[in-house]
Image (cartoon, rainbow, N blue to C red; front, side, top):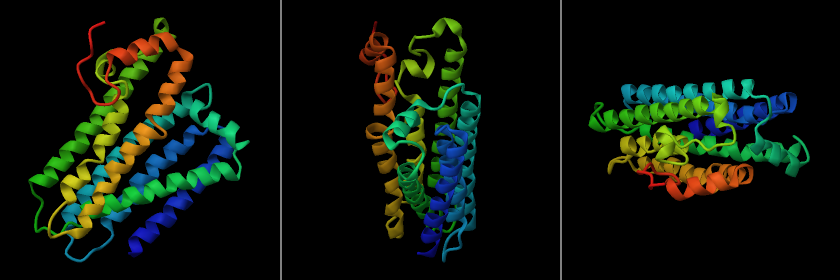
Length: 261
């Protein structure tokens, strides 16, 4: 399908631009900014690309929702990266392994480009479900996205407020959403991608099953690759006793009532 090829090419271009930016800025955190914004732009393109029997209103809804998510996340990471006094420690570790921001770094970013293409396929599957009108499933999908975006934004604000308090230096955030999940921002990040199967899955829309790729891939990435494992390893190194105690009290991913101290 032409639209998927176009999305894949644009993803490669976008993450190659991210590689150039990082080489000049020296902070790999800008990669995440480009990644989020490229999903918004490329995902909206995938949603709006003309398709036989597709409903314009559904295509526009998907484009608006993914654009809202991308602008919120990309904007937040951009501000955080610009204000940080030190480069993103995750990418600094990668930089040491790669020996700088050379070809190995670019190759890694091409893996991120591949994730953009996969997510675009899921968005496309949701946007072109051939039903006559918007219905309750579309409304539910929109509600899931809005709750997830709001939850992630709240988690980010709570963490930022915790870090601004000088007395919290060296401590582990365990209030608000962070008292219920060790990674509420990642949980809500994953939740966003549950919306598209809700919208897409239908017996008369075989392509809709591809929408399941987004939540499956994001679960794997967040829980087993670049999300939770890397962050927890860093926190266990920087504040081992406090974080181990936090791990014993608080759910790893899904928000659950914390255990008594």
